[in-house]
Image 1 (cartoon, rainbow, N blue to C red):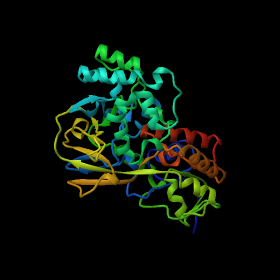
Image 2: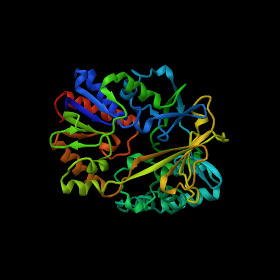
Image 3: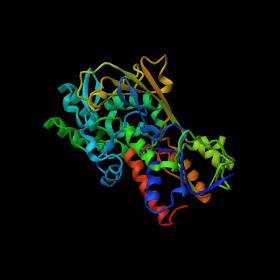
Image 4: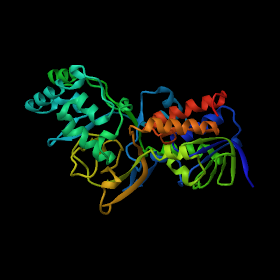
Length: 406
């Protein structure tokens, strides 16, 4: 027997959970909203597990950014503000035997005088300073914006480690994720010995006082009651009739799971399969180490290519009463067995290749003609933080409730 539903959400990550709740709050009957989640609990990449007596975020480093008040107001319905601690972000870069504040170009003053001169001289000769046109691939952009010193010492090796591909395959359309520091900002920071420029996300962030970040999404999942079904992987999709797993028929499907899974589950047009095959992702291993580190950092970027991991999350500096840290490593670089604990996220980061914008635009546009809407990190193939995913869910819910989507 096939059960009809108005909205069928594939995936119970932050965007899917938010959308489902907002639809219910907007008056959609509970039996007309259903979320299917493959894992045993909701949260997606924002789940936490108990490791060495304290929570560890198995999807990597996820925090609640304070810049979007509407998002904070929304999530505080499920985990009140009194249950969160506030942190001024301390992000470091391991470089030349030191820990330099991130971003490097805004904190050159923490290096020796000779190094400051070398880096400033390099930035002063960049294409962005002398008026050359901005290039369209990421590797050339790094040289154009930051100079050969930062490119070779930090940005390019770090990105080769993270993506396990040449940075010249990446586009430049995603640069809003990066800090915006001009040559004037870099020079002024050296003169005044403090950072200048626009910092990236999590300048101030919230983290739960007594649990992991995954607790928020567990609570949201529990509040959905029968509208959430865990341990329910999607195995078959009849696109034309919007029937999933031969069990549910939807008026609208909201997809938050990776599009690259769809060809094995459904019959798709050849041109859409071709576009889906252009979408790339990287798997990431999270490895726990029990030792405390002598650092004030919340996380540390590691550009040295002889070291497998690209980032360390210093758990004892933001999770009260805990110890140790975890590393994040592209799974293709992570040889050998885990020392204490390892969680592999097969789908961790969508890759911002130069081909991606056109490919995902075609997939999403085609899907809309079938009353299937892409949402969240994987539905839009965008490396969005959890607060952005929540905002995405709220916006789509408003569009659906007003009849502007699907």
